[in-house]
Length: 255
Image 1 (tube, rainbow, N blue to C red):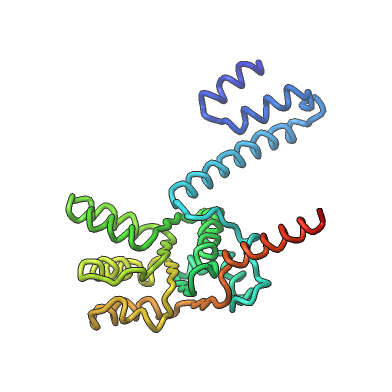
Image 2: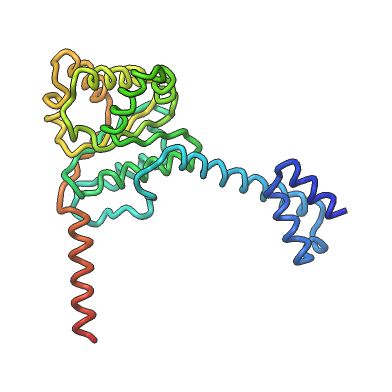
């Protein structure tokens, strides 16, 4: 009977239940369980298996640069990072409120890690997330305009719960890039949530985008009701390298 149940669970793709039942049979612990406990274990195992697979699919679809988590964020360093403000974002209610988060700071201060951590958190909570390097995204969408797939791609971006644009502003904008960005921001304004990370200070974004009328339209939508994080301080990469060198030197002295 157990073999028959296991076979049918596999056919029905109830893999969590299947593994739980195999474990119960192997350890023979099912003999000490009530019917309610038995069913609860199987159902819980299936729920956890499906939830883990959903999260895995979400993370693969998002394609984050870093495998980052909220627990790994360093709030000790003097980076102008308000811990209370940032931790309020981790419940992802800003996505439900369709709010924008803008993060700027020089190279190495941890912008990409911060916004990737928020993206991971959103995936864990069941939101659809897309992460892009801004320049690569604009290049892909220009190609999409040429081959006819642009409407499909822009609709996919429009519908995602959280769009993350990293490395924003590494190159100046041409006319086509400006119009693509305007369309993305216009489609998402007050409808979906967006996070943008940039090395440029916020007051440089206007000149970066260029074309005053379009820059006004884009920044008016981005800045309205947005949360801004202006990271400061030493490069985290340099600090990590320096700490590693110090530890190595201390180890050599000890040896």
